[in-house]
Length: 579
Ligand code: ATP
Ligand code: MG
Image: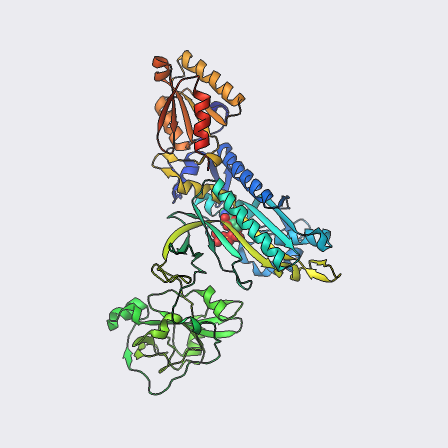
């Protein structure tokens, strides 16, 4: 492709709303343009990169036994009512009516559509497994679209869904997809990690997120260098060498006061851990936070150390609940007699789940269930008895690994892919069944597998850039090679460049030729910004010595070549830059 024949509107300035480097560079290099909040157009270069990522995904998925389909974007309400998600999905679901006033949605994900497809056409176990995927736009009315392609409202996703006859087969399919994802992200040239994610009711190691490591990532990854354990923060377990046995007991007992109450201290207007800590001159690690939560099975109280964060997902799992949310202030007053910030376990008539760490704490400060008062010198077991000790807090740097007890560390990541065993959640609700060997009707055992295609492009730029611009990995660069003729007024140079461009394109090299009649400085600046991996420069050296310069964007290395050696050298360089 010649520069003058394509549309690459590069810019000096990034848009004002661009906070992270990938958003700035995608815009400045002319890969995307914004239409409205979270909605983007892909320009020729952006689309080329998206197509290369998509092709890698196709190869990986196909190798893993999946097949590509294309599903409708607009989906009728009835299907979403069958799964129960028309109500449950919330405001991210864009809903609209057609001319007959029938309700529809623009699909944010396609479980309903695929289940409908498969239940109508697959009758027998002999037709299984089925594993189908598509690469297509999705729409989610995100509450805070931001960071360009990272969190859009309309975005391109690869979504795949598998159907198996039983758990065992479904687990094998899951493993194939796990392997395919590792291959795909490696091919994309990313530095990534597969981390365990929450599986809800499924259990086991059947949900993994694929995280691109980057400081700007929205997700925290907890990992152990010693044994390789890695999980997202929602899921990451914390090792307790001595107190493990306590977790898993049931929360039937309620907190009770076992005579006499601990010392009471007035803490007027002090509600946060920081305020109480300063006022009573005790470190936050000596304070216990009490939070009342509402579950589908009633109310409960959760206790964590003042310097820790409650993890609602872990709490939900510990309580075997389907839903858990923080109780309203009005509920706190009604159930405990005090507002949030003055709650405590002593005398509280609720199920109490205490974080494992609290088991060994002494002289704790807790709220007194009386506004503006705290108890000091509280002891678990003496002043209150939790129904259960469990791991219910977020892991932090330095916490012990659940497998080898070595200290773990925290890194930030961008979730580019997510694989999940769904089990029979959708097939049971939507009556998607097949006949097994004995002629019995069985629900399909499903898995689902997503990749954010645009997010993968953004994440790659987040990881590969410098002050001058993008540094594309070879496999997903819009073009692998850029040919630059330094002086378009010099016929020798332009003739050579033109001939070389024709020959290289003819030989199948993925090349773009900057044939614009602009200053060399501007061409080189744009080349840095656009970040194609290999640059061929025909300039003064060619005039004087007959040599051509090859520059590698990533390392800055310059290699001199004669015209005769060029193809051989470029082929070798190209190969050395592949994953
Ligand atoms: P997140 O926690 O980031 O909102 P999610 O759990 O909602 O992600 P999934 O439903 O698992 O995401 O979607 C599969 C993949 O689609 C994600 O791993 C991510 O790469 C991508 N994705 C999800 N939401 C967006 C979005 N708003 N913009 C761009 N890509 C997205
Ligand atoms: Mg989401």
